[in-house]
Length: 86
Image 1 (cartoon, rainbow, N blue to C red):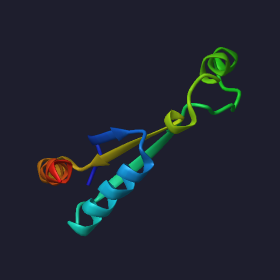
Image 2 (cartoon, rainbow, N blue to C red):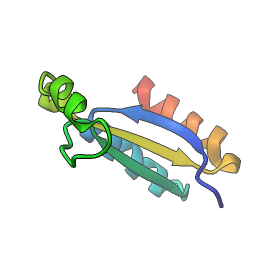
Image 3 (cartoon, helix red, strand yellow):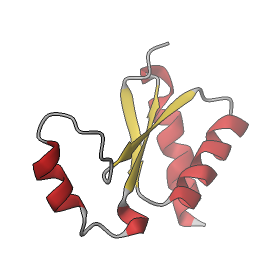
C-alpha cells in the first residue's frame, strides 16, 4: 500500500486527531506528516526562512497532512464529509 493520496491538510491538531481516530475505527490505513514552519535547523536558505517565520502565530506553526492509499481515498473522503456535517 502506498500512501500517495492526500486526504487532508490542516493546522488544527484536535481536528486531525479526530480524523485519525475515525480512519482507524474504519480500518483505513493512513500516514500523517507534520511540517513545522518555525523550525530553525540551519538548512539552505535558513536565514531568509527565520525572518519570515517569526510572525507565524503558534496555532499555525504546525501543518498536518494525512495521506491514504489510492484504494481507500473515496471511502475516507466519505467518512470525512459525514464528520463535517455533524
